[in-house]
Image (cartoon, rainbow, N blue to C red; front, top):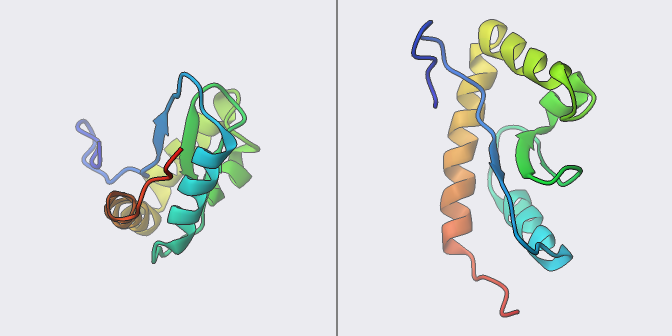
Length: 108
């Protein structure tokens, strides 16, 4: 959701998903596609937990990773205090998704 339905502010974008049997080749493919996308900010594919999350690197740095309430707190702080960053994440997410749709998938 790009805009908070209650408060009306823009929210930071990130994308998570889970594979039943993910492998390194898929991760390298996603990381390369994100790296090749003309984004405004740095992004990280975090694979430290069961769900993979494509997240702005800034959030991981400020929260010291995805674990615990620190991540939710960092997201809330960015949402309420840095609308320009939120807009950049939303724009970048559109670019990344379009780029992923255009690149050839690995054959394996």
